[in-house]
Image 1 (spheres, rainbow, N blue to C red):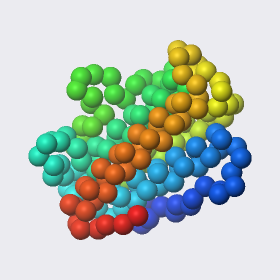
Image 2 (tube, helix red, strand yellow):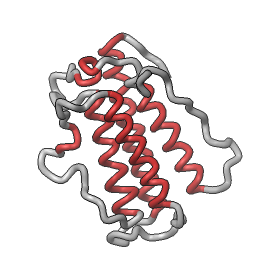
Image 3 (spheres, rainbow, N blue to C red):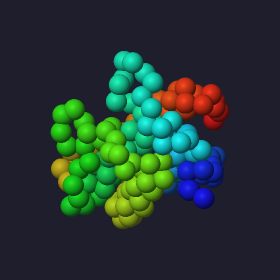
Image 4 (cartoon, rainbow, N blue to C red):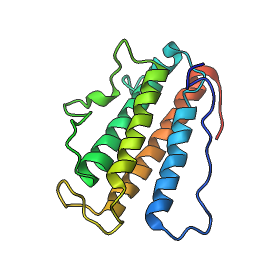
Length: 170
């Protein structure tokens, strides 16, 4: 069974959380699971569909690929200082584009791999630390940015999923 055929467990962060960085990472993990759940059970054709005439490159798989690129750049490269290639270099941003071999399972696997890379990159950083690449941001700012960007794109995934098969939900 493919890892996109069933839902990923989600849990809310602790209500009495006191560790700011952990709280942001826990909210990010909730949003990540929500994003992955939006493609669970979709065929490749449904997940690759671009039903919005004003956004002809926006597909559910494209959103996940873009979120993978967001995490790579902001969490691993900018915050963590990792020496990795950007996944969105170019104009227009190529992270939205699908390759023939992109499937829900492969795109979700790449997204999950980026989560692990990001967690490792952030492991020794605190919210007040400056980013290791350019020192132009705090880790707090970067995490807040990635959380808001992921939340915004989960909203897009809500719409794309509803248009794909009528499923609405959390």
